[in-house]
Image (tube, rainbow, N blue to C red):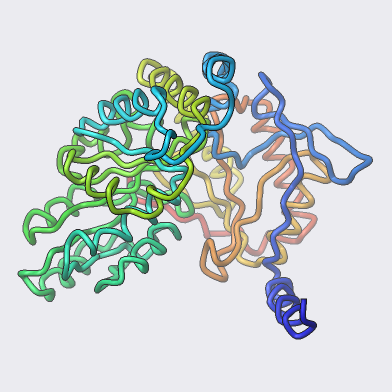
Length: 415
């Protein structure tokens, strides 16, 4: 590599380091059957037992014996990879079954599987302007990076409305060309602020102004609604959402993303979206595991009840301790730190001193000055684990002299 190029790459990394947001990936290995416990490898010579508090495997389905058995059986039956793109030998019977199951889950005609939730958003949103010339996309200001990437790729007019601000969205819709096609893109559960979208009000505006609706349900599928159909299902609004996007990588404990919609919408995306057409499909074993997980959670409302109970229990402890967390209506519990260096230092202290792993969340995932530790309690985090966590946090609060940041800073979301 030419020295000038190397220097520019080094400058880019140094800039991230200087801002205190250089990302360090913790080397861990999960323990089968012992979720949320894991082994941490701080170096090549050392390993330690830890408890993970930041996993997106929200319901521990990645450790569910019946899901693991489905994966193993599919490997035994078919081997590992899919062997190609969906168009060229990469559509197995497992993929077909999973798409039918997801369509049924969301009460839609069809669904379409992508290699990740990120790709599902980027590929689907980016192709919308090819299908709808003159399209205007109205996007919530806190939409996920994958949605932003897809909207940028659409190369059409974009309007950003303030987060969950229905009045602002109405202003933008009213000012737009009445004859232009319109699409409102938003999430049901916002994972960093632990709040939910005013879905019904957005649907009302969509009907009033003739807009399509696109709802990202990745932090809700499997965990909310009848059979785990998501927040739109819980609110009885699935029929008012034109495109539901979800993931197999969180509540379902696997990997992959999908959309569910009217058959002609899915067919158009399938036929035109590069992110779908030119990517090798997920392995058949992954599709088989996801299929089993979806079916399991359709019948397992007690897991969802337990999950909400555990989240409420952790929030109650944080509330009683006057810790500055975002007290929202969802299962996500963000603890505000407000400084990237201190956020990373507290995370390091928790894992090094107490064997508790929670990853620091810094810019650009969240705005500068709002750095946080994001806790995701699962159905398998016990009372004893929560007591241990609280004592460790109080120790860290004292060690890093955080008392001045705690008083009066808990944020309460309306449910």
